[in-house]
Amino acid sequence: MHPEHDYSESLLVHFRRIESLKKAALDYPSVLLDTAQLCDLELLLNRAFYPLCGYLDREDYESVIAGMRLGDGALWPIPVCLDVSDAMAGTLETGQSVALRDGEGFMLAVLTVSDLWKPDKKAEAHAVFGTDDPKQHPGVRRLYEEVGPWYIGGRLEGLHLPLHYDFKELRLDPADVHRRFSQNGWRNVIGFQTEKHLHCAHREMTLRAAREAGASIFLQPVAGPTHPGDLDHYTQIRCYKEIVRKYPRNMIMLGLIPLAMRRAGPREALWQAIIRKNYGCNHFMVADDHGDPFANRSPKERFYPLHAAQDLVRSFEEEIGSKMVPLKKMVYVEEKAQYIPEDEVVSGMNVKHISSSELKRRLENGLDIPEWFSYPEVVAELRRAHPPRSKQGFTIFITGLSGAGKSTIARVLLVKFMEICDRPVTLLDGDIVRTNLSSELTFSKEHRNLNITRIGFVANQITKNGGIAICAPIAPYEESRRHNRELISCSGGYIELYLSTPLKVCEERDRKGLYAKARAGKIKGVTGVDDPYIPPSDPELTIDTTGISADEAAQEILLYLEEKGYIR
Ligand code: PPS
Image (cartoon, rainbow, N blue to C red; front, side, top):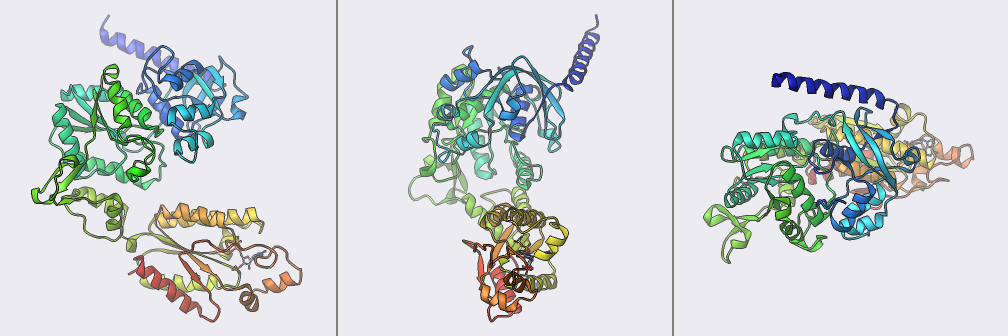
């Protein structure tokens, strides 16, 4: 038979099988996967997690926990099980088929349940992370708080890989990567996983490692459980695309890995080295703090001992078939006008370095970033994503009692910003929101908090898109104010203004007659009268409007914004 005919026949059989599986799976119970679970599923289906062909069953799981090996002895340091809730587990039994779907309900795979059990999470945390204290390790906290209480093990049949719409050309599976390595004639390849922005020092460091190993470089950043609207993800990948252009020809290749990292230090590094071997890398670059949850902090704050990850990977080099390449930090020496390894610096050398917080400061203030540190194309991408404060969006969140002057000051600010006219401005006054966004809400604690987080959601969208949001609700509770601060500070500026005007003064003003009605017992639960107002614990600005006009208060705010660089 003609080989092509043979091939198309088997493809046809495959497609028919998928179609009949899809039909049958319509009757199976479904598990909707979160973003971290989708990452695991993709790497199971595309064989990056070889030798796994499904989620670990109980025996394999216990063996991995105890000794980093599957039941058959194969090296595998990280448990990969499907976690589900009590409610879901109650509907399942062994031998059953389950449809695995993404957040939109799109069916991706069918799992045949071989085991269903309640893991001892304390024991898992201790073995995998080295502690069972959630305060010490974010991975333990996630295991306790976000991972479901039941695990399912079982074989998988893939129907479709999880869908991605971003950077499709970089989403290479192990088969694609193997093919490209052989097309490039690459026999020795160093896998380099990173989450950081890369600059000149990283190019020098990887090139030096590649020369020493006689290898090429596969730069494989993590495109893990990120949100589709996460601006940083897009910037990061565009920066990687720029930096690979700065390498000599046929020296580096870029691909993304959808890995849900556990940050389990040495075990994590070993796991990543095995995964890279599955992609065809026979070297793997390991940092001295690889997989540490606090890798960005000072050496004293790291969780795992320095070099522990390198030592563990090195001890399994032969078994994995991959050499551990230690990541050597490089520093710029001014008089040599070049980078050298940090451990070759001798006293008297004029060494230059820009830390990530210093880089952030320079970006925020539009200051110079020298060419010895980074490439103009990379800096341009960073500047686009991190414009100086005068070009960023920001939210002014005014909180205080009714009658403290929130709406009037908000309106003065609106006019002033319109006069400056460099960013779109939106006013989210308490009354406007209550009429248009929260008309069904009462003044109970729960509803007030919901009202405030709704305002926060809208203000965040405005801020993220470079606008100015002025919010002026009472916002009597700290928890919803904190929620908004945490959300919005990631998108731009956040300025909380507490109008500390005393109740007595607000009550004397009583423009809406609210307090009179409350005192007469006509309405209940009025803030300040018979409902609490919890003052903010750490506002950027506090103004008591007793005896000052709205114009004067607004002027104070504008001066603050000017001083902090938000307006010019
Ligand atoms: S909250 O607590 O932030 O959700 O309140 P907010 O959305 O800002 O709404 C406050 C305005 O609603 C009027 N109002 C009341 N305020 C406080 N307590 C009770 N029970 C109440 N009932 C109605 C009041 O006039 C507030 O307007 P402002 O602009 O603050 O004076």
